[in-house]
Image 1 (cartoon, protein in one colour):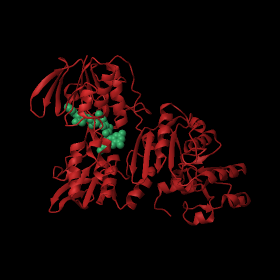
Image 2 (cartoon, protein in one colour):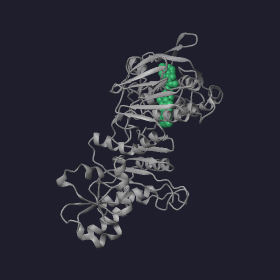
Image 3 (cartoon, helix red, strand yellow):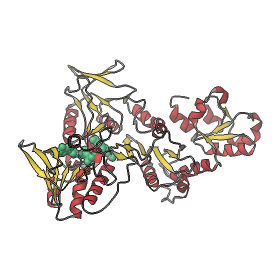
Image 4 (cartoon, rainbow, N blue to C red):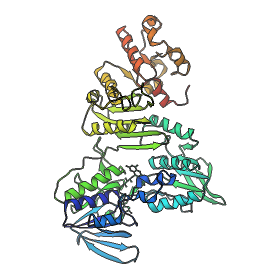
Length: 550
Ligand code: FAD
């Protein structure tokens, strides 16, 4: 078996190592255009900031190890230029000698990744405008930063953009981030990003939402970034983090099928439209685990797993790729945001039915020092309770909850299962009722009809005539610190004796700080003959939607 692999980082390196483990005899050649294989793209922003101090640490596996331990023929600075499918040959260009040669294959794995977008706007090729994909990019950016940079403009507030923002701020640089959408971290639902936006602002980052870079101009001091609004931002450096596009040229030129957004089409065995050619990683179109629709998800976990599966299938096993859930996490200063499965906006776009709950629990027992509050949003099917997606934002413990939910989603579990899952507990690690259980209780209660809930956006957007009578059941002190507009304050402990103050006619929407007292109030009201629902997640959820309201 002669196996050729194009691309030597996440997907390609995984495929190569797995192939060797499965076959001592296979002839395996790995081609990589750059000088390095298997480097840690995900660590690059932290090398700029200094958290990762040594460049060598970014090399997950060295060329030498690949060659000696895995007996792989690794050819770096080797660009694969074309695939001749009928002759089953690659045309390879040795970038050092500029020599071109052919290499034949029995099976081929394409793992060329995705290239950062560089839109054709005026001045885009001026010096000082970078993208970040590999060690060479990071070397250039770090060199400039080390020389002393006063102002940086990051275009794009996605995962990589915000990781860079954090690291530039840690280097003492005045940083502006420009984002086309009206929120940071566009894959998340907007309200879940409120704490991240607040953190950025608190750290002195200038965040310009709903804006795009329209052009770059050279000045004596560096660059001027011209925004759509007409605003001009001075900077010595600008980094574009506005997304990636699959590196599909080889595949397209060879007549392999690609999807509408350019991802190389593969079947569940990761075979392209040519059965002898497999493709993995950022370059491919995958099946969305929740919707089953084709999509593109550039993440390291899927790329690595796909590399392994492609190798397995080539070397005699038969493994199906289950699809990509989009489980992702980002740290922004002391905040963490993580998500898995479908977002609310994706479900709305696809017109799929769902319900949602918000809970705001502490990441471990509240009585144990250091408990940090998180917000957990869980999306599920309105009839079956099947989990569709989850997002969390907070500090410690966010990663663990999203990972648990990612497994639950992949296992096809429901919110009723979340009520039952047994998770590790001691006060410094969790709670006897873990945030996962709490989300299950709230969602399960909602679906069983024990705990009627109304979404705060529905209350706020209801026409005046249909607006529920809103009762704030917190203490007067809490109420005076801010409330949902139009709410009447009747603390839950006084509710039973003050029922006559509540009209019987319209629906009642009760709320407290996070939902627990609102739930009790709802139970009291319903058993007293009122038609009442709890505003899911309480005032804290309201503040995610309306952060500047008092
Ligand atoms: P890549 O890792 O990009 O590797 C493809 C390789 O193929 C490249 O080195 C390229 O030079 C080579 N190549 C392309 N065409 C040819 C050719 N014709 N001939 C020879 N070689 C070729 N994901 C996460 O899940 N979590 C994170 O925290 C995270 N952080 C990231 C931070 C940064 C700064 C970046 C850039 C990415 C990050 N990612 C993260 C994304 C993750 O790195 C990618 O999803 C993953 O590397 C994709 O793997 P891949 O093998 O498909 O492509």
